[in-house]
Image 1 (cartoon, rainbow, N blue to C red):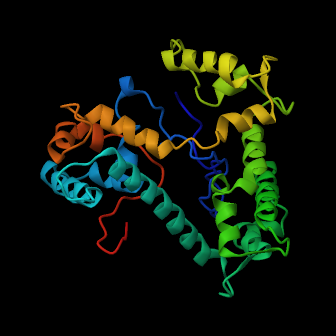
Image 2: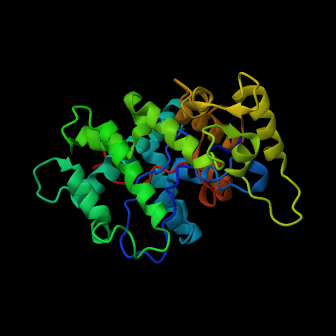
Length: 316
């Protein structure tokens, strides 16, 4: 099944300033990759959960011997009890750890960009002026698609105000984390759902129909036959997503879809990775097994949660 990506709304290439790389549409613990989880079309799903997105790019440029050495170091970090095997709990813990580490690093990166007066807080005005300030005075008039940027500004302000729990217009580090990663905070739930509907709802009726649902995941090429996974998603829409069977997903149905309660996707990814690479089916992985599935590990993706650097000071 292909879940919606965590990707940001793409910026126009002609704009000189950089809107931060926060998730403009967020899903609570969505599939841990921005690729379709489709094993029949290569391995681009499972690489990043094990290695991380940035580290995955590095692996693609290493020699076989270099990648073997790098992978061995990562396996050694995951193997907490040092018995020479990676079991499910160790892999699950590693993926969860990298998720937390990614969020921490992402917040730290943006915090330094926006806390201009270095007072340990980020005011909405600081964020707005840093992100959009160059064009605010001109009301985006020099931008070809100024409506898009006005919408982005309004969306950022709405999300910022929701994250700002005490309403003082200033984000603490926890509130700024909720702004950048609303999927991690229960009180941001309504924003996550609202942004998702806005992104997918092309006709503006406040609901998601089957064409909008599929269109957000898949755009056919001329003459291309619809893949099997798309047919599966059509069934999921009608049989599971559209609970009241009215042909649309309303806010509550979207919430059930993108915020599925206590589903542990890191756990699911650990199980999936073991299933795909555990050659002797003993429920655990060895370095040898991972090397045997080197293409699966090194040329594919699992998570969008950042680089899996082998850092001796990175406490598990």
